[in-house]
Length: 400
Ligand code: SF4
Image (cartoon, rainbow, N blue to C red):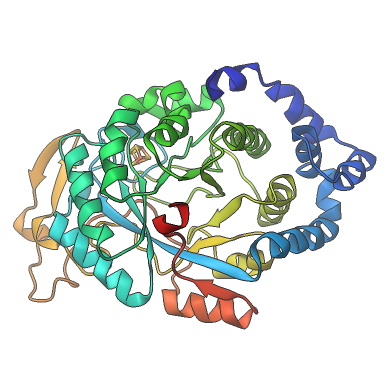
């Protein structure tokens, strides 16, 4: 039985209702449990639990330090391509957005990776839109093979595939797969994904299981907060994580907590999760899953990121670019515009060739980041907070 069957049987509405209406006594009782259930988690993300944030924070901090020590792992996203055949209303890379697009060559991807390696990173997340013509399976295999010689930790965040399609990518050296469900609310999902293969909710939901079957040993999941009701998303992803911990137990699991950011297309969030609710959610995840990695990206402000580090976050990105070629200027000599899937070469007025590839127009990013500090600045901040920044997240030798 896949998680889809379990998800369909989950009393989601009742759990959300229970969370929304939980009395303080229920929150206190849940907080005292040595092992939390999904119902306890629903209580901890309730409005009533918002009044117990200090107690939750203290406990979350203790649990995190017991399991992970005073360590924060760092990673960087490396965008390979911003081509995409899907229309996801909330994403800058959506097919119908007339943005500047490019797919990096393997050599250009390697150049980006070497720049990130020089900054200290040994853990990269390769990100691409979904477009079989530009981002083929063999292209991904070649990218991973080239990078694996330089960087020990390689994860992917690309269009979902069959297990058989994932296997060569794992054999080439990738060990992690990240796939965001975006929203676990089926009605909202249908409204957000207006065309393309991503419309298939169940296929996407089963992706971590296919990735595990193919040999990935790091799995990342999460919704994108700002689409569905945040409590519904949190309860759903908690149920999903619990399922993966039971059924994909050889893998190391992470949950990301991304909130929507401004992007091309100017989509406005449908729902809102406040900073305080986000802190509450991080603590609740930590108390429910003491051993699961919690990931925070540069979508959040420096102030919030710094405040969340001691409370349960274990993995953060830093110095990020969300456009292909963002770290070195690679690919800027072959930008084009794509409108409704048609490639349109740039006109002379749009083109500003320069001897320095870091200048002139760049590919459009997926979204605007909120924390623009360099990787070095973030690492220094981590040290000032009394934690050790760790650049290498994983080594396949650990599983041998
Ligand atoms: S969210 Fe992913 S699949 Fe959707 S448009 Fe953006 S890159 Fe493409």
